[in-house]
Every structure is written in structure tokens, then in C-alpha cells.
Image 1: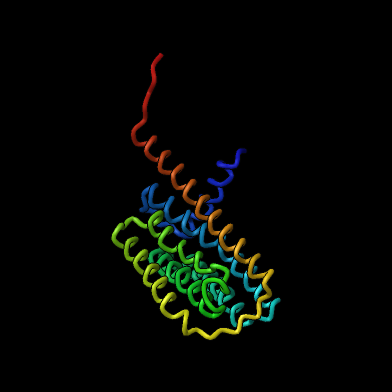
Image 2: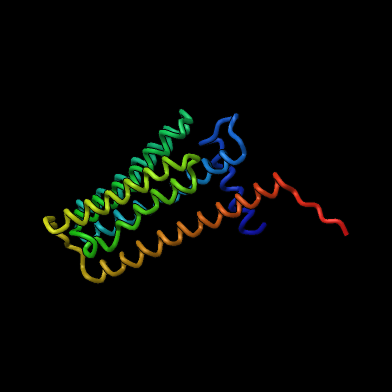
Length: 208
């Protein structure tokens, strides 16, 4: 079984968690992929929290840990209620709000190792997994507003950043690398699903 087939099996496993029987194939794919993406980010929050805690930055550690806990609770509630829209909106709000708050706690863009880049996944996921273009645009506006607020607030932020320089550098690489990998993987899979869906709707037969 190739990698694409394995990934599709994993995505299919998330359909009962997030989908309704009346959902179209396209809607089921969007819901399952979004739920999978958010599930994969949960362990990242635990890893980041452990790194901050190891450097005695306990206030910073509490934020990614809170994201993981709240996301796990959201997934449990989704499995019971199947209210996907509420789940999606709460997860988008968390993935935008937590990184910006963490950045301010750590003292800004540099001290926070560009952790704010995680917030970019919010509007990206909204574009890829929301059927409403207007709502996706609203989430992008929320992200931009958070960027502006962070820039205005940074000069007045007093933070006790106890992270050693080497860890700040490591976290720069981890933040940029992990977010880029997640974004690329999800975008690539979404493109593949879109092509597959289009091919199934407009099949082309080639005669010799």
C-alpha cells in the first residue's frame, strides 16, 4: 500500500467522528481532513509545553498545553455531538489566539521564536476546509488584526523570558519547519482530493 492510500485510510477513519450521513463526498472530505489536521497538532502542544517547562518558563508552557487539552476536549465533544461547525470555529479561534498570547508572554517576535506563525494555520485551514469564502476571509481578518495588535503591544510588553539562546534558536527552526510541513502536507492532500473529485464528476474516456 502506497503512502497516499495509507493517508486516505487515516482520513476515512475520521469521517464517523465529524461527518453526518447526509454530507456530500466533498463535505465529508473537508470535515475529515480538518479534524485529522487538528488532531495532529495536539501532540505538538504537549512537546512545546515540555520544552518551555524544561527551561522553567512555566507561564509559557501553560499555553500550548492548554491548547492540547482544550483541543482534546473539543474532539471528545465532537465525537458525542457531531456539531462540526462549533468544533471548527473553536479550533480556529484557539490556533490563532494561543500563539499570539504565547508570543507576548515570551517577549515578542524574537523572544517567542516566531511562534506566531502557528496562527497562520487558522486562516489557511479556513480557506481549505470551509465552504464559505466570506467566513474564511473573516478568519484571515482576525489573524491580521492579531498581528497588528501584537505589533502595537510589543514595545510595552514586560516579559521574563528565561529561555536560553540555543533553545530560542531551536524553537525558531521547529516553529517555522513544523508549520510549513503541516501547511504543505494539508495543501497537497487537498489538491489531490480536489483533482480526484473533479475526475469522478467529469470522467474522460480515451478510445484507441
